[in-house]
Amino acid sequence: METNLPFQLREASLAELLWVHERIPEFPGKASLDFYTERLKHRLHLALVAEKEGELLGFKVGYQSDKPDTFYSWMGGVRPEFRGKGIATSLAEEQERWAKAQGFNAVFFKTRNRFPGMIQFGVKRGFKIVDLHPKAGLEDYRIVMRKDL
Image (cartoon, rainbow, N blue to C red; front, side, top):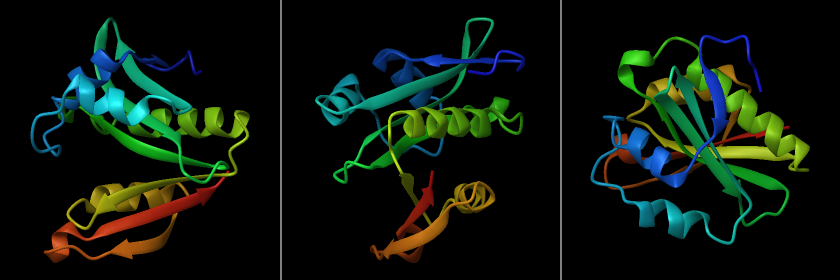
């Protein structure tokens, strides 16, 4: 992992993921440790946090999808006051490096129309839109983005 950054990346506990999750305003509702535990148990996964001087700035977590060669970048975010500093990019790069080292050939994530910044982030990182899942409102349409590793 990068060490010359103004923050460090390291593997995270589920409690740390939850702590950062609760500070991301785009995530509605209350999460719980069970939310993470149930999703990640019995799956090859990677949970990362970005940290500076003991303060958690952001996180990224993903796991092996139903396709054994494809990694699902499930959840992530950076606290609003720390955005625009390369944290999300560093977390994504480390996740992709790890996934490739584990033998995964591709990574994908899902987002919604209401998050154009996430769509742009994916495009800038070489992801392509590969599927669309209509929901009740246009803003909630799910967009699936994929990138070969």
